[in-house]
Structure formats: structure tokens, C-alpha cells
Image (cartoon, rainbow over all chains, first blue to last red; front, top):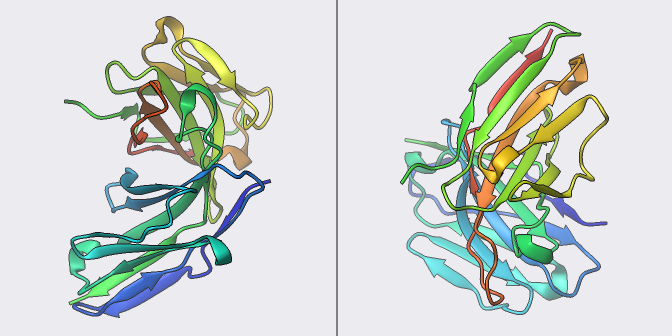
Length: 119
Length: 117
């Protein structure tokens, strides 16, 4: 069975601080996908990144960066120079990557981390 | 282009009543998924449609839940009769069919917050 653990329930930082959100996963599949989603107060889940299990390169997108380490089954997310608008719940997720659903098939989510960025 | 839309955004019903949630996916997206987040727990997969066919309904909690997607466009999720433990946020997501091994991410709606009292 697949499992995603986000050990940090809540994190509070002051604007401009860097913050790392942790994600540890478990799966028996050799092919899988990892995701991060952001849920702002409006409620929808906003896609941030998808990574497949064969690509361990770290990725940077503006102030966001992701560190994928297969050896420790972790996919951590760092926000550099945080801003108030980054305040949201962040979810890490894992998919089985099968059939016509492709990489989006049957996502397994962590419980989420509530990030509060104070001015 | 409109995103995934869900109706209603909130619903408060009494135990034993029936509620129907609706999801309009992004036009052209054949994959449609339902997920649910019960308070304090993870977002959990309920089922997956490809067009009008149910591909996987392994996450449906019990037979009080019925999902349909007639015509392969919008989908409904009916809970009948509702119980207290059905309270939570119900999310819908859609994505295009995968072609040649490549696909795009799933787009989620804002969710329907269901409260059963």
C-alpha cells in the first residue's frame, strides 16, 4: 500500500524566511509520480509540481525548489524568501501511474502542512 | 478557459437526507476523479471515470454513495442516506487522457464542503 507522510502539521514563519516542507513516501511500485499541491483559502488544489520516479534531478521554479531523494524516499519542498501570499495548506501526493489516468491515477495524499507566513 | 467547477460549494443536511454533489470537469477532459477529505485526515481517492465508464471505484466507502457520469461530461455524486461520518470536503478533478505516455496534471475544483448534522 502507498503512504505519504507530512510530519509537519503547521509551520509559522516570518516573511522573507526560507521554509522547507517535508514529505516522506512509501510505495512498492518502481514507477510512480510525486506531486505537490497548494490549497489557498479559496479551497481549490493548485498543482505545483510533478516528478516521476526516474528523475531525481532537483528542480527550481522561482522561489520554489524541490529535493527528490529516492534513497530516503523523500520529496521536500523549499520556499525561499517566503511571502504572505505563500500562506496555504500544502499537500504532497503520490500516484500509481497506471492506465488511462496516467500519472494522475489514484493519488495518495499526505495530511497536509499548514504554512502561515506572517508579515 | 473555465476550470473544474463544483456545486454547491457548501451543503448542510440532516442525517438521513439525500445530497447530490455535481462536478463539471474541464471541457475535453475524459478522466474525472472524486476525492474526499474528512476532517483531520488525508484526502482520499473515491473513484475514477474515463468518459462515462467507471474505471476504479475502490475508494467508495459503501453503497450509500453513487457516482454517475452520463454522457461523459459532468458527474454527480449522491449520498443517500447521509450519515454523520460523511461530513467532509469532496473534491473533483479532471485530466485529459494520456497519449503516447505523456499526460498533464489533474486540475482540481474548489471542493464541496458537506456537513451532516
